[in-house]
Length: 311
Image (cartoon, rainbow, N blue to C red; front, side, top):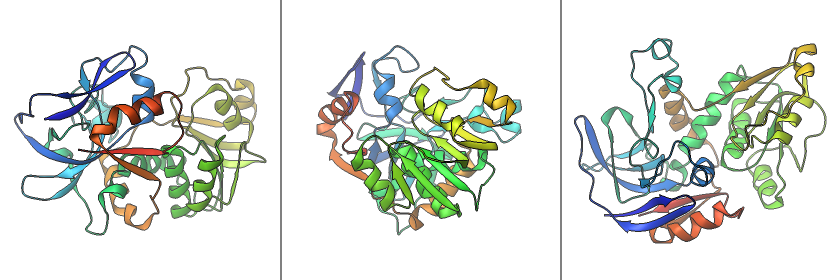
């Protein structure tokens, strides 16, 4: 089968690879869309969790051999450790992710555990369904923020995770939503999907701030613009540099929460609410253009906001 393969640091190639063989308890899914994630764009440039040669792709929707349309929860947990028993399966001590620890969805087919499959609503097309995984991250972040319905929300970064946070905040009843990005084209989309105010930087004070960039400057902004006792949730992986004023956190009892992924229940919630959201900010390309699109995004291109590959 055809696949987009991470072959060396900073390099992906279209290759013919052996077809998928299902393991015990696995299903073979024909891939209809696979989203390119910012973590992959950063991850292949430096040694880390992803080891070449590897078929990446953890944002996957497709169909089963009997024609069922499904989304794949890419995170597998043991179900037995203390964290899993507490319902924090995304923090499982032996968690694994398709596209990192085993072959993912940048291919014509992918093998996944049967328990990772979730059927899609009939009124959700594959282009929008492919954004369920980023949306699940926003669902989880909203929960970590304490379900802040009726409060003032700020969102730093209008990439896929940031836009998902904007849509989640609007859907869940935030009093107001302000979103920032350096790219005007992304600010326009943020306003279209529900942001009341957009700009290059936050102005004023917020009850909750979602940092979907994760750089030192946005870390600092997320703390500076937070009301006393407020909560900022960090979803971005831009830099390990914390960048914020720790004394401010202590003196004004500000809360800084990290958000890695989501529980299976939150993934299902993302599927349930997806038909009610806009989710129109993706662009679909044939898998054969994967090298071109992936490389352009890796080198800093901000268009498209979310690229989907279609085998």
